[in-house]
Image (cartoon, rainbow, N blue to C red; front, side):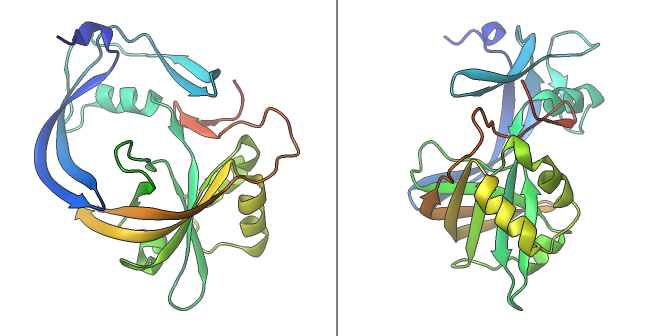
Length: 221
């Protein structure tokens, strides 16, 4: 039996819907509670190297925290979990290149060759995003691209200079085709199939992925 006290952070889910896309089960669920177990630190690890390590700072007992409606302490906890920073780009129907900074990018372990990301309905990027069959590119940002990550939180039009930097300075780039989309509350879930992957040549040793943690971008360990 799994000992929840030793698992760090676990979550209770209320299942809402399951759909199968390209051999991958897309599960929609609502988080109803979060358990802390014995978690004392959250860490970001890249190739067996600690990129960031921060203490879990909470002023409530280590028991289940209410999640919905969102409890302040639960929000604090989730903000401390490290997330890799990505830029998603696409070409709108009128030809303009668009970009969006994302932390919601995931690579489903059970679905080889697939990448999933979320986009808010109110964003300019969503307005220009195509449907099933449209192409997108996903770039895992490096620590040299902090300014780009910050810029495309609020900006959508991808400039020529930024496009070149995103392609040349990222950790990895994936060209994808949208396979499935799903609307969940105020977000659009996009499941894509990877058509090709490119790892740019790096001219700087020790370059690391850009990580969001504790409400800020972590550019060094």
